[in-house]
Image (cartoon, rainbow, N blue to C red; front, top):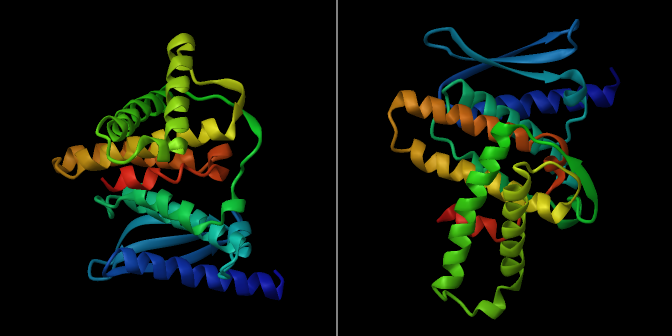
Length: 252
C-alpha cells in the first residue's frame, strides 16, 4: 500500500467512525482488516453491554479511493460511504426513523450540476418488485404535482419545467399500461430522472406511514425502504440527478 493509500485509508476510517458516532449516541465502533477478503469491517456495538449489533464492510479498494477534499469526486464518494452506513444501520434497527429520502435530495444539491449524466440513452431492465415501487411512487407524485396546477398556487406559465416533467410522468405510465413493464432498450436520462423521483417519493410515502406504525411494521417498512434506496445506489441511477423541484414535494 502506497503512502497516499495509507493516508486515504486513515481518513476513511476516521470519517466512518465519526459518522457512526454522530448518528448513534453511545455507539462504539471498532474496525478490523481482513487481508483474505481485502476488506475493512466496522463493528458497531454499545460499550455498556459490549454487544455487537451490526457490521459494515468496505472494500480495501474503496477505502484507498476515499477523499476528504471538497471536490466533485470527494463529495460523490462520501455519499457512497454515507449511504452504505445509513442503509446498514437502518437494516439493523438502529436508525428506525431516519429519513433517507432527504439524503437523496441533499446529494442532488451538494453535487455539481455537471457531475451528473445529462445527455445519453441507456438500456434498463427492472424486476417486478422495483417496477411496482416505481409505479406506486409515480402515481402518488403525479397526484401531488397535478394539485400544484389545479390549485393555481402560482402562474402555471412559470412552471414549464414542472409541466414537461408531468408530461413525462404520464408518458412513462402510458408505456407501462401498454407493456406492463418499464424495461427499455434506449431510455433517456430525463426519463430515468423521473423514475428516480418516483422511487424517492415511494420512499417518502413509506417514511410517512412508518412514523405512525407499531415496531414490527416499522421494521418491515424499513426493509422495503432500504431495498429501494439500495437499488438507487447502483447502476445508472447512481449518476442520474432527480428533478430539482422534487425537494419541495419531499418536504411537504
